[in-house]
Image 1: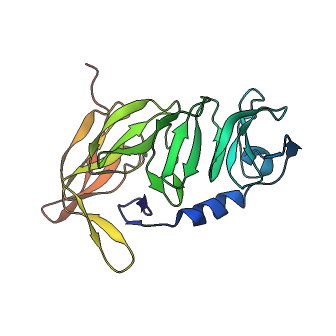
Image 2: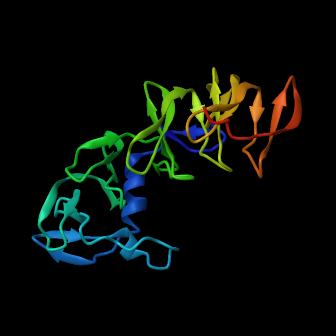
Image 3: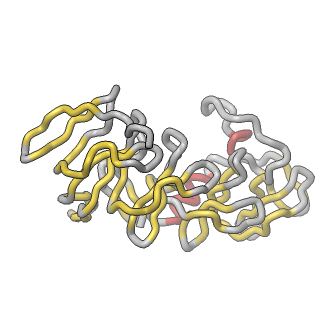
Length: 232
């Protein structure tokens, strides 16, 4: 199942659409050993500021069957083709890939590091250096190395914004003919260390903006100040 709306709405999305969308961004950069090498950063030089591609990092490359793996700059295969989508390696040494079973982040040996929440047809974006993952039906956060920073313990969590993430316990999905919404439950906020800085007592919350958040309690919307937890 893949999520499709930051406020809790999600939808089931065909993985093949994901493949076509991302592969459509890729262009041929080089050919070697029967493989087609592509860097999404190199393919989109005008897409905004990006880090310089490290030549030491494996490069996504496609075999004649249409599967993707990773090659060295000289064309040597490093990770055998096994993916329908293969993203660039981050400078931290992990890359987002997709198989018919879903999305994951792998390390330079091809081993699975973590399985992210799937959002808008792809792996959850990093927001304030953290992204979401799902384990046993709960949501947590990991960093750009794939290290779990906040254990999966919430029914839902929004991306970090303004230094905090909205999280809920007891919320559940409710569907209409096309979408599902996370309803009920109680909401609060955590900081990047996973400390609960606003207790989960609110019916609904908006994201933090310049240190304040709009929250709903007993049917009434109020504004609260959100601050970091004091040091232990």
